[in-house]
Length: 300
Image 1: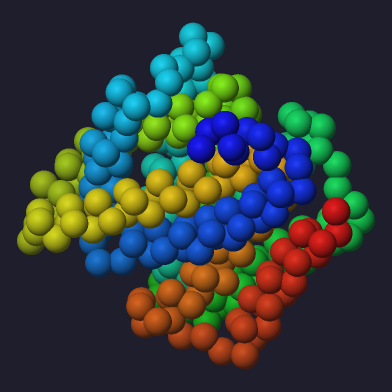
Image 2: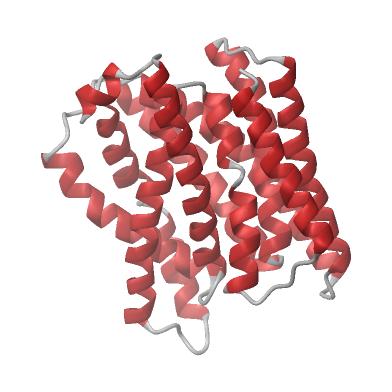
């Protein structure tokens, strides 16, 4: 599979596969966010997910994929630090704000900064129509976040704090997307990067989740928690793996923008499973997000 994927880099078939992977990542990322925000405390849930994908990834990293090249160790160390900061900020934001308010802000910050960063790091360029699509998508995302903010009946001061954390988290999304795209291109076999990334990335948050679990009364039941943790790990593999492979096959910025259509999927999940409300204004803003993604894809 590695040889087949590498053979598609820079081809039209690779571009089409990158599109499918980025959209799959969008849906799966929305599912992942809802799982972290849903039934259990977000710190505890994130700890269970990270422990699960550490345990699953370890035998693949050690015994299945090719061993990383020497220069990859520094890249993995940087990825560990960047993702830890991202996850720490995300858990704090989810702890303080409603999912449909926090999630759009987190995802809205990412694509604009990633497109700019990809231009500097990878020399990517975009047409006027694509830039219009980026701004349309980002504007729709932030419009959705503002609408949700002003219609929330919860403590506005606490929600404002959550939005500040969401902005910082979104900035880290742009950082890790660009950095990880560079990392997966720096190794011969893309699955080496993915397997070792998940093993190393799963080391820190279980400690925080366990400490948080001990302070909660009543404590979340262990078996249901880890069942959801394993499910979350599988979703994380598919979501992160899809977008990283998309960035190797095609433009990093395009993959990042298409992934942020996850906001549309997140809104649907919020309504169907988290019992949050939606109306015509939010539907219109979600349509702008989808239209922006279409412009980015077709304007190249």
